[in-house]
Image 1 (tube, rainbow, N blue to C red):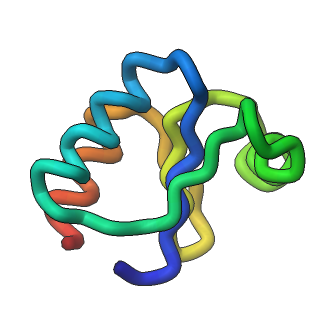
Image 2: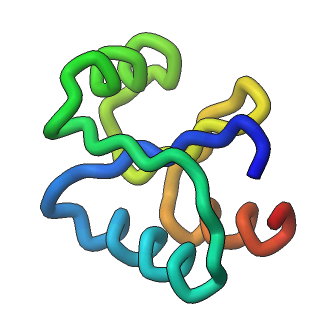
Amino acid sequence: MKDYKLFVGTVCPFCKKVENFMEEENIELEVVNINENREAMEELIEKGGKRQVPCLYHDGEYLYESDDIITFLKENK
């Protein structure tokens, strides 16, 4: 996919929901765990405005909420 990045957390069921959808639909994009990558967490807070996951970075925008991310991926795969 384009220059997309999915920010996730280690024990986040909503992150797992998005990751499972991506696996089922064979969607590959960069996935970054903010619990394992402090720089990614700082990027998310600084540029996205909050520490909430899942968060999909796309085209300069940060999209939150698992259902919204799945809808976006369905429409833009």
